[in-house]
Length: 260
Ligand SMILES: Cc1cc2nc3c(=O)[nH]c(=O)nc-3n(C[C@H](O)[C@H](O)[C@H](O)COP(=O)(O)O)c2cc1C
Image: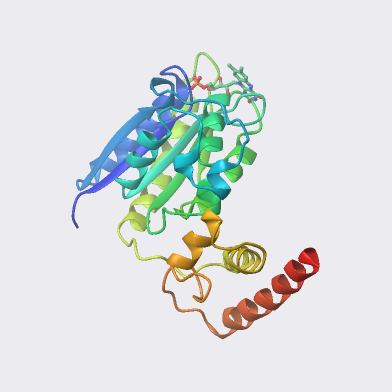
């Protein structure tokens, strides 16, 4: 296998428990021999707060009025075979730093571009709530186009106990094994029903409600997504082909009703 590049983005402003968890995960990936990892602390980058103008959605990401490091961070992801989003639990959600970063990626949910790349999430909580944050980050990964390996969370308050550390490392070991397996087969996997539904919803509503003055519309049109079964070539079984047809009709009806 050619050497694979994995970049982990850490949403804690300090080199604390989240960084350590990511370090432990990356060490396990590198122990496999043909993986090179890089840990990126989001706090080392300038990430502005989205102003909500939606220029990125309609006119294109190059029309964003903010001048920060968004594109440098996206370039790091595009140059990677795998990506990790890691965050501490702050007030029962990802950290503000991580959330600002995700908001800056908002247009990518409209125009996913990370297909064929592997994703997972790592969360560290003090007491409670990490599981929901993992689910949130994994959902974000799917929305951005990644193939998601289920994320994990661990518990660490200061100081982290030896028992907590052992438990964290055992969890991260299993996560790393699954991640490596996915990393080794980057061909897009057959989508689940929910992923298929999201694709059909997006493309059907765009084709009916938008036109080529809109950046999302042009992105879908240029990739042939208005006519394809999914974002990338894939073999849908009979049931999914039927479901896809139903989704198309259902969402077309909804879009036409909205437009009338
Ligand atoms: C501002 C702030 C808010 C936090 N909120 C929560 C919380 O809602 N639930 C929780 O379990 N832990 C919470 N914690 C604890 C952290 O998630 C925990 O200590 C974590 O290990 C910190 O990661 P770090 O060492 O990478 O900064 C909070 C910590 C801080 C600083």
